[in-house]
Image (cartoon, rainbow, N blue to C red; front, side, top):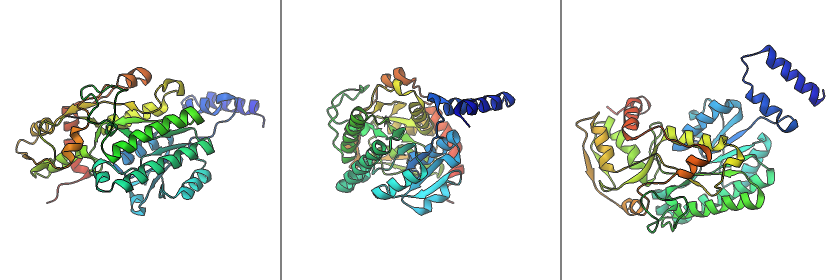
Amino acid sequence: MTFSNLEGFFTTFAQANPNINKKPLGDFLAFGKPKMMDKILVIGAAGQLGSELTQALTNQYGGDQVIATDLRDSAKSQFDYCRFEVLDVMNREALRDLVKEEKVTQIYHLAAVLSATGEKNPLFAWHLNMESLLYVLELAKEEKLDKIYWPSSIAVFGPNTPKVNTPQFCVKEPNTVYGISKQAGERWCEYYFEKHGVDVRSLRYPGLIGYKSLPGGGTTDYAVDIYHKAIANEKFNCFLREDSYLPMMYMPDAIKATLDLMNAPRESIKIRSSYNLAGMSFSPKEIFESIKKHVPDFQIEFNPDFRQAIADSWPDSIDDSRAREDWGWKPDYDLDAMTADILKNLPSYFPPKK
């Protein structure tokens, strides 16, 4: 069957089925030839971000088109809605084989050692965070993959960065191995786009807060753990000072931003290092007071530890005007709306221990 006949077949089929979603047809006929269906590979899918992003990608592309991967076979039980493979991202050949065998078109590379955990084992954190990214970028170049997503972080900023409404372009000088690896990763992403045309996209996430997974070793994870303690009627021991403002974001907004970025036309993406992204900014005292509106007897104690120095080196708030201008970013949640939603839903995911 010639392509012109094939186009006529699909047109007739669409006319006979008026409720069919016509967007896949447009994609199929784009550029004058059939387009392969997207095949999505999520590396590090079982983490805090990955577990929710993988579900959202499955909703968009379908379970057969999304492959969740994690280092642990036990993570398979989390992904009954899509495909799952065990993958060590540091095994370069295994990664290459999976991409080629499955005809992967997009990679979401989420595997990383986070800020607080990275300070305990800096060489391992650098090795995993940097080499795994370079593996993915090289693979994207060689196999001509359509898109790569790699998350950056507010950890790229350091003590000499403007702390209020931190601009997109400014002095960074991070002082954690996590932040150093993210800053270097941003430069590599831009390099591979400029030199090799790799369509890699990135967001500088603030602290991410969700109720569907446990804290993962980040400095901002106090804002996840505090809700678990609230529903368990336990006093919360906070490892930051009560007045430590940090940029934060509720997970549904983070997922929305990621999908909006990845679905935006290539020409709309003007920044190829990583976009600043903002949701809200608050202190431990303010999130505590937001929770007390729903849990009046909740108690907190402040005992700053080594993570306080990390928090002090990061911005209080972020200017994300470039993301708003380039691809229409806008968050949906503020602190009180997030608190109400988490306290409503968290008990069904992690019932309090009796």
